[in-house]
Amino acid sequence: MNYLLVTVTFVVLAAVMAGCAVLGTDRLIPGRKAIDAVSKDGLALVPAAEPPLILSDRPGTDELERVRFATSALGYNRDEVDGVLAKVVAENSRLRAELEALRGARGQDAATDLRGES
Image (cartoon, rainbow, N blue to C red):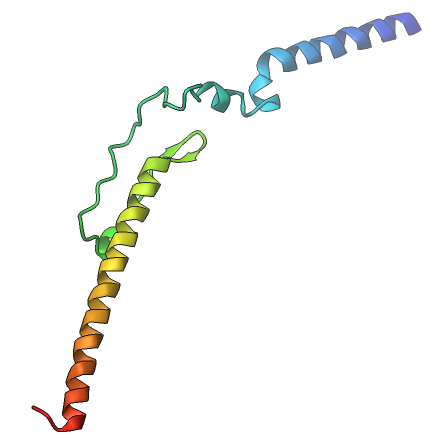
């Protein structure tokens, strides 16, 4: 009787292990599909399903609030994020330069008013 129980236990255990190996590989190794989706030379194997992200030359607040990056198996598309950040940095630099120019012109006007010159 003991041999029968040991044999049945062994068969059930072997069946459960085989089922896990066949049906549960994605659960046991979740990154396997993501690794298969990555190319060895850095190029995407599957083209992006979403259209490319295009911003105007001078993105406004409303346009930046609507930005949504396409996601891939390993996160956001790096080129899209880099492109948006480059445009935001350029616009920020342009606005800062414009602000400094306005402050400089306003400061010169205030200095001439204090000296009594017209």
